[in-house]
Length: 608
Image 1 (cartoon, rainbow, N blue to C red):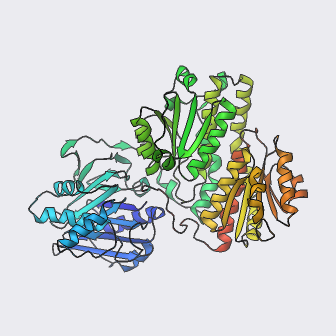
Image 2: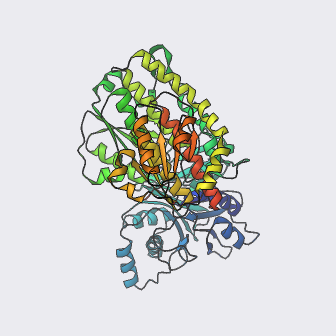
Image 3: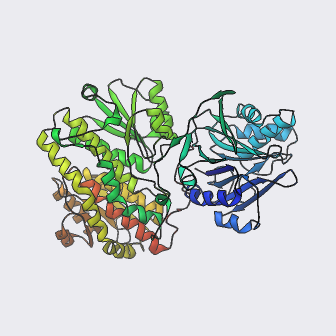
């Protein structure tokens, strides 16, 4: 969940890596640091608690080194502080190391090093690895890559690392296991980063390192080893414009990405509609009609908003394709020794494609012989490579920690999957055409909702004064309520809990009061009257109600109403979620929060 930038080349490295850290700051922002070769033959390290700008303010004006490693941190071991910021050094000050991931046997290794007389200067797990590498070099190992390989053999856990040795100032060694790391190849320069956003301003020639890879970077190129033997990792051209990572006229990334949703949905469905047969064409699934008909159950695995999008996906698959489907948190799934069935399709969902719990769940399913496809946002990511087939979202980069456009694009991807599976079964051509019409209408309808954001902002400003809210919905509205509550917690820090509306009277109704309002999601479907009954129960107990629905007439039974256009009933949940994104965003702005860097959270969760 932290960010790494390393550079070896012909240009001054410090401005380049600091700019890269700023682009990666959504991955961790409690401290930052960098290391460069010093003119006297040693290393110079600069570290600062706080944001990347705090680090930049401490740097001397003229630093001419052409090699650097840098890091922005999301704390796991040790509180945010200068001493716990990366890079960490070995005892001799010869080796500097930055690290993403968690060293699981760090306590044991710290005790062993301390018993040997090593003085540890931080509370981190990372520092032990710097000492282990330094000891290999001190014992006479002349090759930094070999020293790193031997040291890594002593640890358990996940890592993406970059290592700098004062004795070899023109090279950096990197390695990955369970934590993403990419190489960018330019003209007489090579970068290593934990996210594509730090590369695209410099090169589009990208090398995806795999778990177990160890690479040595020099200005003239790179070489990759596995188990000490050279292996081939060719560069690929990525099709991402640098402007995709520019904020433009927007104040926050979250706001920009909410407004990018019409275009993101347009891309998600582009080229995937097959009008002739009223179905969806998903060639990346590598699933023949015969294979699709053989699927008897679908299990969707994800974390956070990806898991909630999976819940919506499971609902769509059951409703449209009439296949039993369920979504589970990926970590819970893999730790309960799941039964893997040969006729079940397992779907791994991840915006980054690097979510560790979801990747580990994929590996568990595959180890037991199950079939996995991915629904991911990043081409070439670990989950995409592990699954080997699936659906890319084509939503574009998402920088805000709080997911909006990838959640919506994921829901659309599941709608396409449901249509595809339904049409090889019993979904009629007429219903197929109906859903295709609904899918094509989504971008314009989302744009219509966004055009009314001033009304949402006004409601959010009034409701941000509450310390907690309940979100409720039935069936199609239930997942919308859950995702809306999650958004409010993430960015506005307002306690919010979501319940199926049918469960309200079974306990949560005790919390309803004038000081704890209810947000009710009310689709215009067969359960409308039951939803109105729930609202009546709340108002009878002096509870305030904000309704998200399709009908302005709902104002007669609510204190506030946010109206969205109607689509097809199966697709309405996609639209009903949009105003709740805006609601959370504007509540956070009203309260003065740092919207794109919510406390205690980071974008890509690559540790357990």
